[in-house]
Image (cartoon, rainbow, N blue to C red; front, side, top):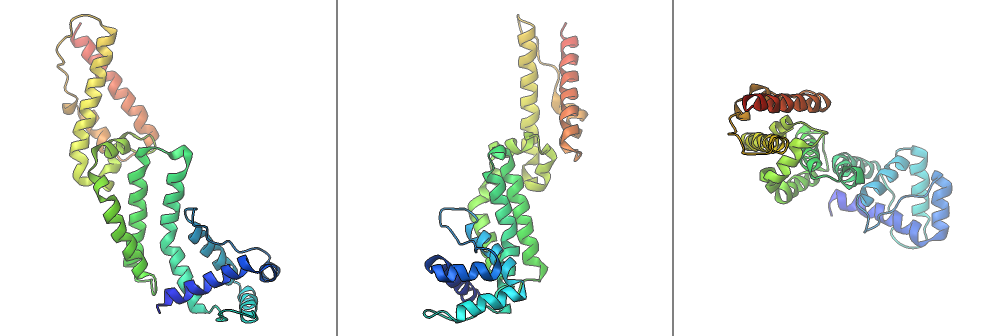
Length: 261
């Protein structure tokens, strides 16, 4: 049996003990001044949250001793105490799963329920997992981080070529178009061209609404405007980006109007 299975079995046994025995539950609460969180199948991050609480308890030597005393003194079931190797395994599990849990929580928030936040958050999560894998600090959780990265590629790689998702990222107010250089560098040129094309069409439509009548030729090509290209590639703060983008588009529209009056 792997180290992880042994440690996870002990954790599950302790949770079962609390859930199934009122006496044991009261003993645990009296010993550590709280009830342990236990996994719930229907809740995201439930197992992670339960391990996090268990770690907080077990890292205090007096609590670890009290928990093991309760386990050993049970009349039935496995009576194997939790040891330092188990705590190390739980710690590595939590460290690996931290970015996954944060990403899931952020994507679940109602205030952030926009397509544009998906790729940046996935990118951050994957970067953290890769750093964990490459750090050399993991003694037990390397198979976990490798499985997560393999699953990531299987489930999400196609999104890095999805132009609708990339466009949503590029125009999300929390980010800048330049974030695509980090998230999907191979798609930057295609998304840049689409942004410029849509900006140009938007300005043209606005001008035609304000100047009814035969449409004048659309001479101004935003793809040749260095201000627009610089804005796309700039890495400055998104607030300034939004202000400058508005200024560039306004100037572009005014210039087009002057050229066609």
